[in-house]
Length: 221
Image 1 (tube, rainbow, N blue to C red):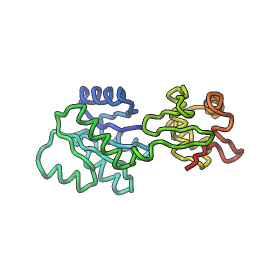
Image 2 (image 1 turned 180 degrees about the vertical axis):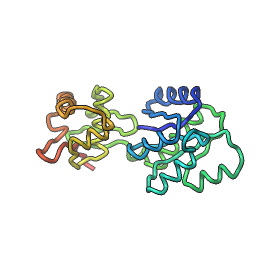
Image 3 (image 1 turned 180 degrees about the horizontal axis):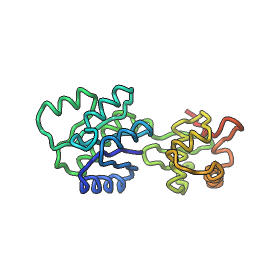
């Protein structure tokens, strides 16, 4: 699961990013509100952690813009500001939780897990049943055949995660490139190579292709 972090304090940014990556999250971190907002608009994040007092755009301005465009990414505010007015503004704009600095990283982890579980009902819905007795956990990005885990690289997991998140719907090559490779320069032939490698590790029809439509993974429910 991908999380966005907006934190202008270098030590906080580095320590939070490292901690969250160690427990299995993918993190995009930013030091100013403008860069963070651009990323939130262009990419899909399961959750955003926003400091308030940051350069260019403050955290409240970022939340306000997201609300205006209908972006419902769950948001945790982290700030050293303790006055009730600032806290109230955040909640009124739609933030889901508030964490006062300094905080323990374990507490942040618990807040994140609780919010993601509430928003996405991950305990019930993270395990997807796929065709040919495969299952994929959206929470841990683990692909299994019955009880045996399939060894995938990080990028292969991200590709499977994207296709499973859009199960039973064809995704064209450009959509895959924009979402899995975040618009970075990669040849379609290289994407097809990733798909071929996943098929070799699983089943020839694990990822289904259709000329002119793209690729999909079929879920049974």
